[in-house]
Length: 243
Image 1: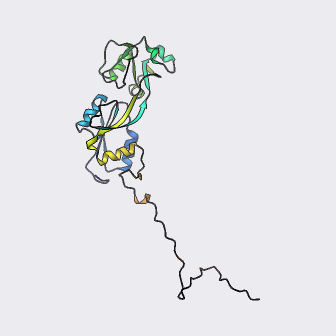
Image 2: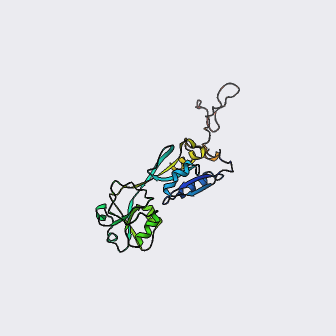
Image 3: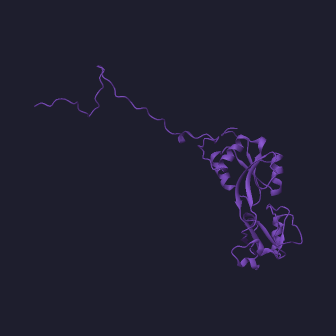
C-alpha cells in the first residue's frame, strides 16, 4: 500500500501506562490518508491480540513470548512503590527493597515486573489487576510496586509513590507478528526509531520540495565565428599601450 491510498487503517495496540501520542502524531503528519486505530489492551493480552490479527503492531511490556513475533525494545521505566500518604516511605525521596521488608506487598495477576525474589511479605490476596491493587493500597491493606507510568495512570490524591533504587525495571517494546511485516508496519518502525521522512531506509517518498536542486553544469565561454573565445563584457583585451 502506498501513500495516498485510502480505505485502510493502521491498527496500533498499547498496554496501560504507554502513551503512543507522539508517534501517532508523527504518523498523522506523514501519512494523513492512513488513519491510526488505537486499541487499548491489558498487558497480558497484547500478544494474543497480535497473533490473532487484532492489531498490526503493539506496544508491550517485556518479557513477552517472542515466538513468531519481532520485538524492538524501546525504553526502561523506573519502578516505584505506591503507598498511602501517611506511610513512613512518604517521608523519603527514594527507598530500597530492604526498606520494605516488613510491609505486605500486593502482587497483582497482571504484574509486568520480573521478580527473582519478591519484596516484603505477601499480601492477603492477589488482585486481578494493578488498578484493583491500587484500590487496596488506598484502603491501607498493603503497598504496591509498579512501573512509574502505572503509578501515574492510577494516581489518587490519598496515595503517593517513591522510586525503589534496586528493584527490577519494566521495559517497553514495539512488537508485531514477523510474518505480517507489512509496508505500514515498516513505516511505523521508521517513525518509532526516529527516522526522518527523507531517510534512505524509510518507505515514505520525499515531497518534490524536499528534493535537492539539480547541480548546474559549468557553462563554457561562448566562441565567436573565428573560433576564438569571446571576451566577456566588461573585460578589456590585453594589448600594447600607445606611447
